[in-house]
Image: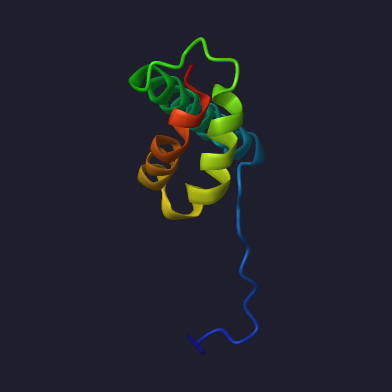
Length: 84
């Protein structure tokens, strides 16, 4: 390590490639999130319920820090309140 004490370390980053990969990642993450939400609504038969997004919002706020399984569990607890 000390063989070259005055050496300069240069990091090379392909900014365009990084941005392209980051966009791909974000697009895929968005797609998977939308699939989760839609599957959740289908699973509980509330795809046409006007209050489904409100219930999801509350479930997300309460459970997302513990993962999607917890969001599912929170939605499970709330969904009966929005069903007719």
